[in-house]
Length: 575
Image (cartoon, rainbow, N blue to C red):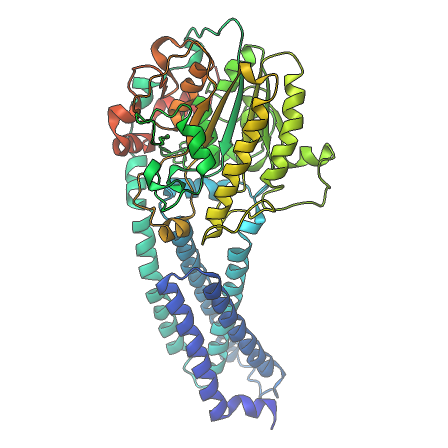
């Protein structure tokens, strides 16, 4: 039987329609249910690939079947042009709608609870330096969905054209696509509180006029012997990973080493048996926002940060929040040598720009490790190289920094505990039911072991150490599986070895990322008149934090609103 005859046989049409309807039903079901596990993702991909190949086969059969008698009249040519346009438009429309549904569901499943403004910020941020492993699957899935949706729709258009039913089909197909799209968009609007985002960004706030303190206008007094600072940002490290007995949310403690470290040092918990840590405020619920807030007392307001200011060319000049005066600026003025060390690309999200522009840090990133001969140029895992290597290289760089005989600020950011699922390295153990739990447990062991090494060094006695999560985890699937979404989530935090002059009474404080800026300086023995810097408060003082004044809900609302001072003096201009 000829290929053309096979294509027009009734049996083939029935079989093909049944298969295609089954594939569409599978896609619709997985979309509505919001399934995210690996099996469902591959099922969806397999469904689309199968339909796409089938559609391609029939499309090719049409191309290579015997040509029919042509009608060269002007009317026929117009009909042909119209048919070609409609043939392209309908598959393209359904492909775009399919992608919109997929993106909406993916964001809801993996970023639930993340502010909409933050998502916009990251969509603007260049992908340079991104850990491609964490987004490889959704990228491939998206491409397959687009291609397969196009082929399936194209197939229907071509098959029904001969029966003069393609116009009715186009209408039905469009309605079907919109029926799938509408509930997803409604849920997306609700889950990400886009209405509140639009409302708050049109309102004005005076929180900066009322509370912001520029360190350049404050007479900071350093101790006669300036203390070194080691500040370790712990990727996505939060208190919920600890057991309920110590203030966490888990049935067993995934971070026992971090827990013991914090309970024996400074936490402002008001209870020596409980952990405490800062809340991640709006504008500091992602890594770059967390770095900025904790080092400058100012959130990275993703609602009004412009693409041209923050996401154009990341260079060494101060083009990242040029108006703020961060801890790096203060320590540079005091003669500190400063280093920011990471295992990824420093250009990602403007980290090199920020730390170069605010303290002239030496930024040691993935490419620095290659240049230094620590790793080969073709070595690349996760975001660059794993934390176990970062810690080993940090020992060498820290020893060299301390040997200069001048005060230093060594700041480091881990990455293995980044979502999704974290990076399972050679040191991780198969202890818990979820990989992410194993990864955070491994981080707890590695970092506390690093601190044990630091305690053995000559520079330790004159060094203050701060450990703090950069933000809480964004792994919404993990949060759902561990029943953590309704937990009072805060970042892990402790201060080790503060200046002997610091008076610490373990009184409970409610605080945020913003308060880490003045509190870190105070822990180094720096006297801060008024006990405020940026929007932060020195927690060693009795001065109320903004979280204590406003409450977290109202504070987060204020920080979403537009601010003339923030926009004109901090975001776009320098003093």
